[in-house]
Image (tube, rainbow, N blue to C red):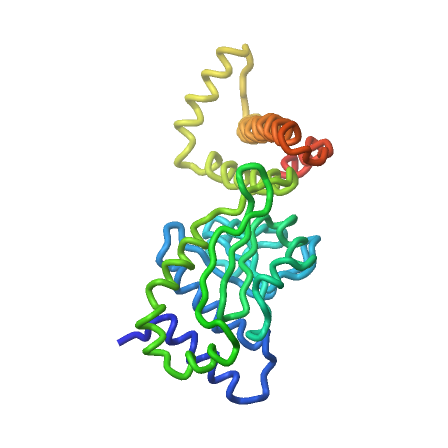
Length: 286
C-alpha cells in the first residue's frame, strides 16, 4: 500500500533532521517538492514544483510551480525565461514565523515579480496573491504545527498526522496550485504569446494543416487581391498570419490592461505604468 503523501513528507523531513548534518532550510527542499507534486499530480492541468529557480530579476525564489504547457515535450524542466504560472515558493526553517516572513522585503520582491508566493516554514503554509485591484492579499493558510518542537513531534507519528491533516492538507495545497498567478508585466505576456505563436507556427506548417490553411489563404487572396505562387510565399503567408493573430491578442491585452490600470488609479491612486508596447519586440522573435 502506497504511503500517504503527508506521511512520506514527514518521514523524509524527520530522517534528514535526525542526521544532525543537514541544513535547517534547504535540506527539506526535496520532501516539500515531493509533497507539492503529489498534490499537483491530481490536478488538470497537472502542476509541477521545481526547486532552486534562477534569478529572473527579483532574487532567487526557493521554488516555482509550473503547468505542462510551460515544459516542452520530453523536457525535464521549463525553458529559460519561463515564469511559473502558479507562482513561486519561499521557504524558511521550521523555527521561522510564516507571517513575519510574508512581511519581508524579499517576499514583496517575489510578489512584485511573480504575482503569487507560497510562503512556508515546512509546518505552516501561506499563499499570497493579488486581489481584483492588484493589491496583495492572503488567499489561503494552513497550519500543521504551531511550533518547531510540535512539528518534529508530529513527524515522529506520521500515521496519526495523516488521520488529522492528510486529506485536508492535500486539498489545501490543490487549491493553492489551482490558482493561476495573474500576468501583470507586458514582457511576461509577450513571452507567453511568443511561445504560443511558435507552437502555432509549427502547427500550421504541419502537413495535416495544409488543406485547412489553403482554405484560409484562398479567402484572403480573394479579399485582398493577392496571390501566393511558390513555397517561399506560402511560408511567408503562414508566418505572417500567425504573427498578425498574436499581435492582435497582445494589443487586446494592452487595451484591457490600460483601462484596468486607469480604473485602479482612479479608485486607489495606484502608480503610473510605463509604455507596454516595447514588449512587442519579444513577439517579433517568433
